[in-house]
Amino acid sequence: MRRIYTLCFISLFMCLGNSLFACSSDFSCSYGESCVKEPYKSRGVCMKTVDKYGIRTFDAPRSSSVGPRMNNDGCNFTTDCPIGFKCQRSTKVCVKR
Image 1 (tube, rainbow, N blue to C red):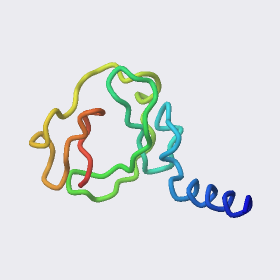
Image 2 (cartoon, rainbow, N blue to C red):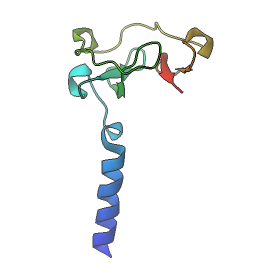
Image 3 (cartoon, one colour):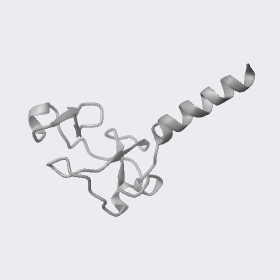
Image 4 (cartoon, rainbow, N blue to C red):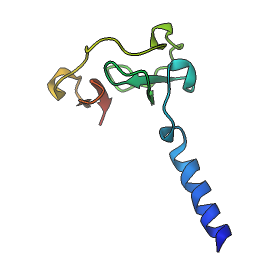
């Protein structure tokens, strides 16, 4: 029985992967991901990067992602985002629907 619980935990861990862990910069994320932080926070979540059409991009890590996000710029409403995206108000970034 203990082995079944261990296997379930490992399976859950593998499915969720990086979403369980916070990042401190783009350098802590996989290639093609960016560390997205809430305004004035130093920890965030790795998200895949796409262009305004939703096509995957593989940009190099940004050196400006190190340290806290010291601005409150970004979207406030879904109308601030391109078609097919919605505004995630906690992080003030547009995410693909």
